[in-house]
Image 1 (tube, rainbow, N blue to C red):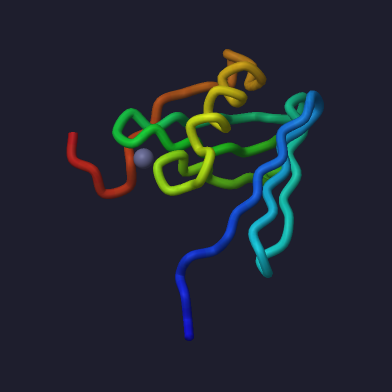
Image 2 (cartoon, rainbow, N blue to C red):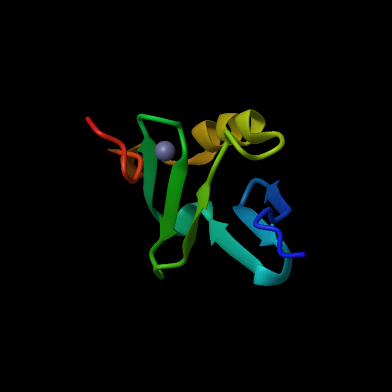
Length: 92
Ligand SMILES: [Zn+2]
């Protein structure tokens, strides 16, 4: 009955990125209000946070179309907010 898999839909447009995660609802981040974008050096996941503290993690490895999403992120996310993160639990 209980499935851990959540269908995630990502919408990227010129102004924002929108994450729709089934019953969990919807998170919207404006590119202009993006404060932090951690890029994982282990698996390539992105940890996005805006100036209001809202955010979400993009997991290209486990999402359908994930690599395409990452390409769009690289185009849209301002360089100044990108930093490198380690995957939780990964050893150096
Ligand atoms: Zn990672």
